[in-house]
Amino acid sequence: MLAGEAAAEAARRTSQEVDGLPPGEPGKPAEPEFPVRGDVRAAAFFDLDNTIMQGAALFHFGRGLYKRKFFDTRELLRFAWQQAWFRLAGSENAEHMQDARDSALSIVKGHRVSELMEIGEEIYDEYMADRIWPGTRALAQAHLDAGQKVWLVTAAPVETATIIARRLGLTGALGTVAESVDGVYTGRLVGEPLHGPAKAEAVRALAAAENLDLSRCAAYSDSANDIPMLSLVGHPYAINPDSRLRAHARERGWRLRDYRTGRKAAKVGIPAAAGVGAVAGGAAAAVALQRRRR
Image: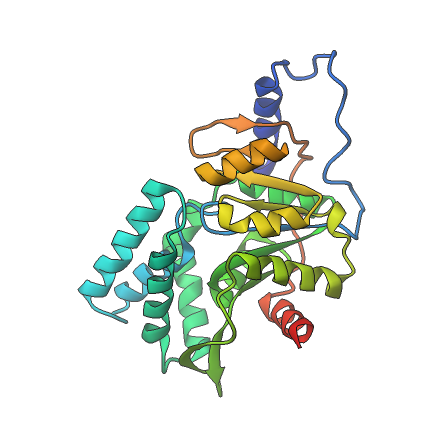
């Protein structure tokens, strides 16, 4: 059995047990198949930090840049404190996230985009690959196996998000765009960080560009900041949720899954994971969003 198949089967078996029924026991109406195989007007949108990956991608990226002497120990300690807060609190702190973005922009200013992309590939292998939640990865693979597109939607830099999407075999990524001129970072952003309501706007724009029916789409996140995005779709999921999102999800009857402690809540069907999605990359999605905003 492939690793993805094993993760999917374990998730299915555990969720059945949480519902109070051993796998295959009759007495409870079968839920409709989900994701719906062959539904090309459906897609899935996944938050990244603490949803697909433990911790924040931007902080891991900062660790990799420190190793390559892009900045000094003082900056590293600030990154470390922000990461510790994120892991202990399990949620985003707006001040910390803004500080991290400002630090990252100042660090990459004057460097070539191609250089940072190459380094980003190395950093993924060093700090990110072993922090992917197998359960969430299996959920994403289920959509791919059903023939649906799967997008990362994150406040992390679009270049980093695109690397992660490609490595996981996902369709592409939407992320925060750092300005570059002639292939060199200027230290400024293009527009606002892709955070909170901006994520919902990005998903809505991408859905229009891709001719998707949002009522048939799914979205996954750990943070109450993403309630606007989760509320857009017909199938919202709270993954490793913070306390506010957990309460909101329970009130709305959204499905919950928590991979941090082994708890799984609410049943979800996951077919065997074997296929690999085509990579579209973050650039096409970013262009679609910019066109939508004009």
